[in-house]
Amino acid sequence: MAILTAMVPTPLVAVVCGSRSDLPTLRGCFDVLDSYGIAWEASVISAHRQPEALGRYVGEAEAAGVRIFIAAAGLAAHLPGVLASLTGRPVIGVPLDGGTLGGADALYSVVQMPPGVPVAGVAIGGAGARNAGHLAARILALGDPAIAEQVAAFRTEQAAKAEPRIDPRADATTPAARG
Ligand code: RP5
Image 1: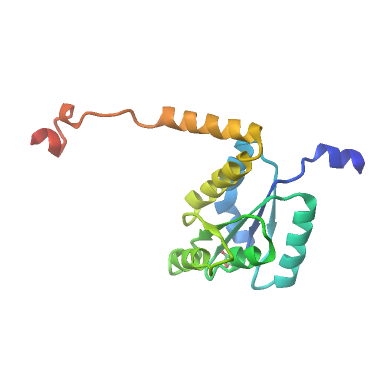
Image 2: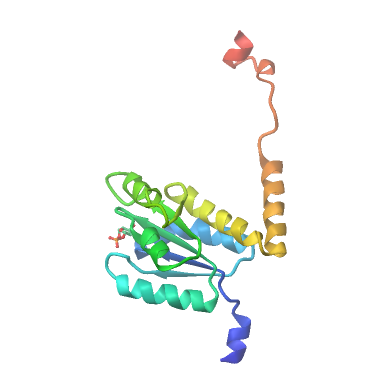
């Protein structure tokens, strides 16, 4: 047991989603956390269907050393807000596209939190899932030089991959070039 504990790094980030059906969208979040070398764990716990289990899990995760929670849910997405009511640690909320309103329902639920119970809302769906990972890394980087180095390296690489400056006048097909 002791050896196993030593080999498995303590998760710094806990990702919680409301349903198994949310997991494919969260793949990008897991990939981003992995790319920074940040240890994470993931759980499926519904705020609506399993409120007591959610309360128990948050206490256990905090005791285990989790520093940031990422909560993702669709429809009336109460999971991030309820989680923020259960912890004083940062909560990042990912609204998911779960039905007829295309994720707008979840977005409003995530960002319209009352004062004093903050949730950092990111974009709907896959883009938000990836940004939740990046945001968690940036928060952790404030107190962890190794993660800060990873964040800086990612930003440098991202800038290098971006489109170089273009001169629209050189491209005869653009309206600017045609005058
Ligand atoms: C939310 O309801 C979940 O986060 C999911 O996005 C949505 C649908 O859940 P399932 O019906 O797939 O369990 O609680």
